[in-house]
Length: 163
Image (cartoon, rainbow, N blue to C red; front, side, top):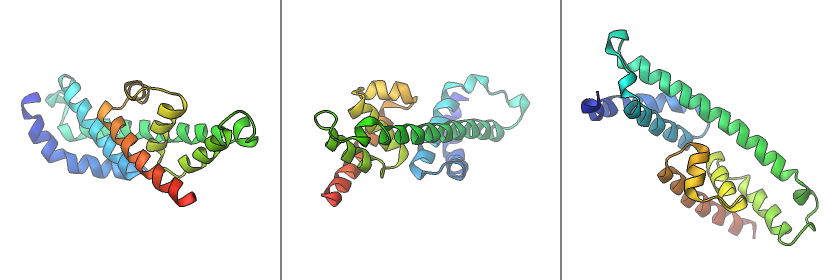
C-alpha cells in the first residue's frame, strides 16, 4: 500500500477534508485533522487488509476518530481558557507584576481560534518549547510552528486594535 500512497492521497484527500469539515468547528482544525488522517494512513498502512473491504471505509473511520479527538480537545481548551480568565490574576489585576498585561493578553487570546490560542498559551504562559507543545498536543512540529506564526500575527492585530 505504501507504493500507492500518492494515488490514495490524491484520490481521497478532498473527501477526507469534506468529512473533517463537517465534524470540526474551525476550518483550520479540519485541515489539521486531514493531515493527521493521512499521517496515520501512512503510519498504519500495514493494518489495512483489502480482504476486509475497500480502503474508503477504513480512511473514513480514521477521519471520524481524529475529528472526535479534535472536538474533545476544543472542549478541553475552552474549559482551560475559562479557568484562566476566572483565575485570581484575572479577578485582581494588582496581583503580581505584569498581571494587567496578562489579563489584557488573556482577553486578546480569547479572540483567537482555539488551536492557535492553545499553542500560544502553552508556549508563552507555560514556557514550553515548540517540540514540547507538539508532543503535548500530538501535532506535527510544522503544524505547531504554523499555528504559532499565524497566532502571533493575529494576536498583534488584535492588540493593535485594542490599543
